Image (cartoon, rainbow, N blue to C red; front, side, top):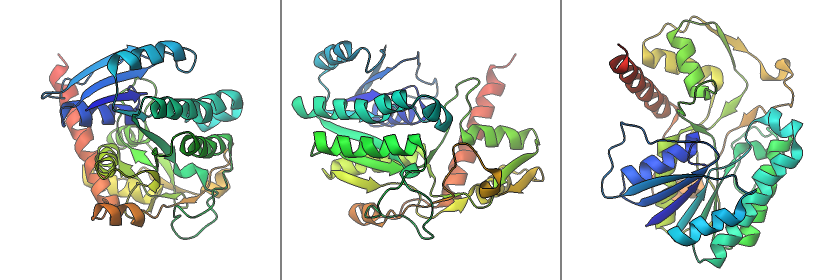
Length: 315
């Protein structure tokens, strides 16, 4: 299968490329605004991977030319303006990347008879519920990011009736200097015995990026479409997650301080309870998704492997 990944240099895009080209032998074309090279730890089988630098939607004609040459059977959209502060500061850019671009990509896939997968977020909810959100719960975003992602969901499903829209909360490693992911920041902070504050009232259903991608393709294999929650089987606070990770890595975790999201008064405000009910997807795939402890183990394993690789390249 030929798979085009938009936003392949990001956390999720890298996971899609790794799974598709280096584990399942698909031919992958990655497109993003920055350079990206496959990790030396990825061992390609029969698949192939190529990367192109394009600014989409500014260079939409160039994108269509690339897609015409490549002929994708599937396009996975991992591109987004995800920083909450950046979205508040530039709502037009957020609308362009989180709403308008996915809609145009979905329409393009419809016209070329290709499958389309769009990745959304738990941030479309207001966090006021006290039990996990289902696909039937009405979104009520509290910030520009959530608003534009919700509008992007609707635009995609309107443009391409067979599109697959997945809400999630992923964790993993991006390996981009100066811009650590939550997992990277947390692991490095624990390794260096830094004092950090993690919220006890901010609860989410996190999933390791690689596990999420496996479930994404399992849904595709069943030829499913529409809106789905694909995250962790359970939920935990950031404080609980950090404590479990410290224990898994063999650190004391003494530097982890308990904080309260509501008292922090962050700008923009963050919804506190964003647990997602994934029963619909679990039932369709005939399995339970991984829980918090399993995700913690995956993050710890990844961090140990990366730390070992760094030691091997150091003089």
